[in-house]
Length: 172
Image 1 (cartoon, rainbow, N blue to C red):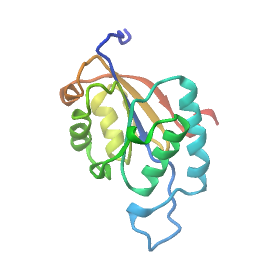
Image 2 (image 1 turned 120 degrees about the vertical axis):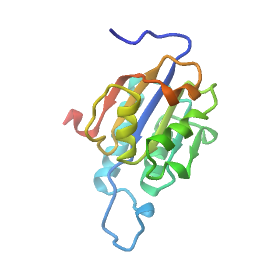
Image 3 (image 1 turned 90 degrees about the vertical axis):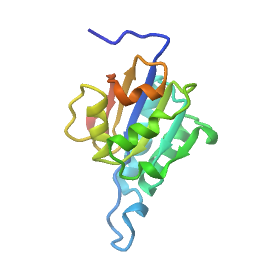
Image 4 (image 1 turned 180 degrees about the vertical axis):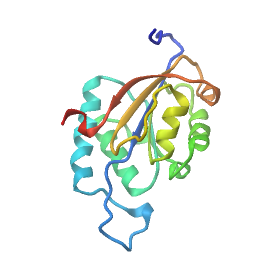
């Protein structure tokens, strides 16, 4: 039985940052940039998402270099205005409860939210918010979960249904 689309519908797109570089041992984890594979996967995945026709009203990203760069690449491809692009330091290696807390206070005028962050928090969040049992969200992968709710506050105690999942090697 599929999800019934209603007027009170929120969609959450969860995206893990693209593959990052470990080439500079003196860089902090926070400052690690994308590696060549990440730079290649990012525009491809953003274009593939654009082709779905799904709308994004707001992006919230971890400010860590690799997540922020990935989110900015998606924002540019999706033509997301700067005022609809936020970073939140709480997303840096956040666990499920922190991610849900941040999401729960998003303005309810936002129906389609896209977040960018890190594992293992994002994989755990997907498992907590849906019945999609994913062992590991790959780098630059995107998962969409739809909720029959009218307010993001309700995300604290509800589950949705996965309706979208794509990752770089899915078309290899």
